[in-house]
Length: 299
Image 1 (cartoon, rainbow, N blue to C red):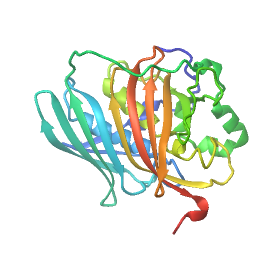
Image 2: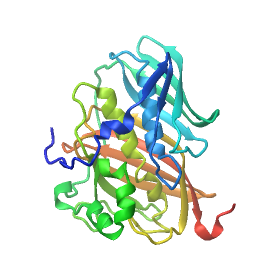
Image 3: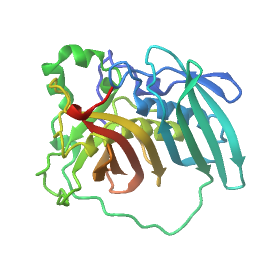
């Protein structure tokens, strides 16, 4: 286990963010904290939906992909019910569909696929030789100093760790014209159980939604993590997809390399790759966001 986790007794274990209650067969309930004001954090909704799907799958299969659509803003003051449809159980692959519901309306849908492990040849993109997280400042320290009230309310952020790489950091790939990028180290702020591989994947699903949307807006609004200035852009996740390539631990540092190859029609696209400290590509993510400049927003 990677050492150096925070020992703040006021920080709830990250696993609490993924906790759901089984109401009946294929029916679960959870609660999500706010991401934007009065909107449930989409990464937590997706992670709880995946947790619900995984509860209906045997331990012999692990999740390898998910595809989700954010349909309506979730209300962080109300519980969310997750309805699981067992679409298919094949000899190798199994598929589940999850609908997250509040007030009788679907706020999120997800399809998730699980498979039995098998051996095969391997290849991957090489991880860039960037500085490790130990060499980078903790952005939460500056955020807490600048905005102590906002930081105190950030239940989710206080349960994780992040380290942003500056654009001129050694080993950073050259930024291609029209393709803004940001690289960040991520991990949960408290250890996760050793005996639950699904929990590791669901935790990474949560983490994957933290910075992808902002990557699509870097050409309009440079990184402003924890600042209080009004946003110049309106961002909201439209859909989210992930592929899990190799085993990993979400409570150990993972490099999230993100790029945005397109922005048009009020939408932005972001691609991300997760690497562990050994340079293994463990997961990939793609997200499309609603992306509007503030002066162009409509009621």
